[in-house]
Image (cartoon, rainbow, N blue to C red; front, side, top):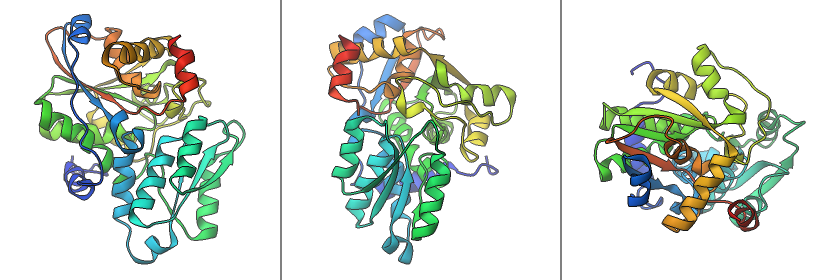
Length: 320
């Protein structure tokens, strides 16, 4: 554990740093969901977090750690939407200017919200342009602190506070299912679970079309894939991070995949039975649980619902 780039001590420090700014989201249960799976499920609804996703945790923590001139100059992030909104809101709350590089085809609701929080938005074509290279160039030209969406120690530590809260509120778990994009959320959650519920098995879930982390873990090295075509826009990553990969290798038991059709079924379940809106990416972990890829009968299972920022028109189309 001492060789990992982030530790549970970092997660615990982040929890104190974001206290009073981030919501301590509740733990939700569903007798229907338990009946479907035979497990006792504990949902952590980060769709109820500020700006509608877990990303606020890591963004606020990363900005809070900036000092002096870095705070005055401002920050830059690149994101398909939720990290963008998180940095924009966290920056506004802390008086730090934010510039966000976003794909031109990002959901309209996410583009509008990011601008609404006061950030400058610079768009790019995700199919032809390298967002990270573009962001690094702009950050260097403007002297801005770059806060990437997942491959950043303070972001990872902040995201881990979601699992810390879940385990503190629900008790020790047998399994924890977490959606996977670049690995920031599951890395932080794995650190928290390892410390607070040592017997817990960490299971990551990716879209079928974008299983870069699954391939990377099974090969033992970072694998790069083409931009995946999936409705889980928050998981359209092409490779895991250099910081997140070693944490996942050390602490994540397995990574599963689910189809877009399974994500839609999970969205329908949350709207119709639990009366909450969860975006496609936010349904990844739940879809794998509902699909019974692992026998969870009799187990205590945590499920992170990572966000709820889905365009209303798209939501209506998905659940129709």
